[in-house]
Image (cartoon, rainbow over all chains, first blue to last red; front, top):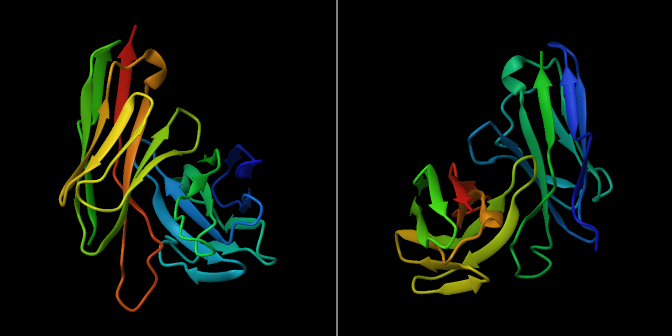
Length: 116
Length: 114
């Protein structure tokens, strides 16, 4: 079936602009994760949803970052008043866990955000 | 705090030259060690999950092994299409809370020359 999709694939924002990044998880996947990946680094956890509930937002770097998943499927990561340090690739991943014991997370292609 | 260290940072091999990538971890209550492959401009692609010391898994030219302190990704007779960044991640039990987080290493950039 279809994998995780993200849009847009590339986003250029001027410093101070607001941006919204979309994630469509694999159909039926209960868990959804957002990660931030800086150049040359591994992904770093931002936030976790189980269905529509945001169970952990401890990785969000500041209160300018906000995520939602209102109907338990599509999720949006919003960044307000973007700063240069927000430039990174934002990855979304989904998993069928905890509906079953398989914990593997399946990643989308990411959105590359560049703040100028 | 969980620590995941991958070495080397970069590795160049000739086609057919077998080698291993290392992932050392410091985590209590390991609930899985994961290997992913990431191609430029793409998201990580799941390869393996290992749960206990002594476990091994294979897929084509790749074999992952796990000890109590580290994991190895062995690449046998690599081909140029195996060129990618290989990421290691760990999941652990968090007392009193959930155990869903993955902590990633920085990855090893593998280049296989024809």
